[in-house]
Picture (cartoon, rainbow, N blue to C red):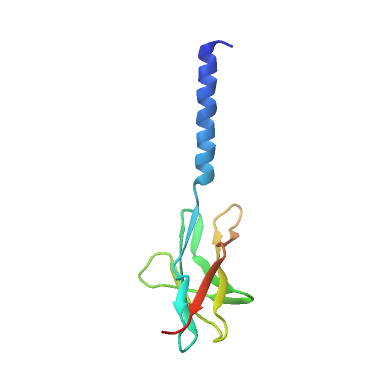
Length: 135
């Protein structure tokens, strides 16, 4: 193989590697946890959980989207925040004797596919809320 062909093949291999790594790091969905990691204890033991879910999936049927926060074995449906894009929130009760809450978000939706729409479920990474003593 001549030196010029070797240079072409090396450049081509490098370009393909960059393309593969670039595609692997591009995320179709972005989940942003808006719930603080620490909150002071409240008298009513109710805490707001908020999340933002941005998707670049063009085939998503947005009206079908359902967002949940899962705390242990309990599932709480979240409500879309009016006048904002892609933001969800709900109140979650936390027993007075509990100071750590482990949770994650689940996003469910239908997307357009052939021959019929398909169902998608995406779970966030796990998060932790620490409830501190009241001031």
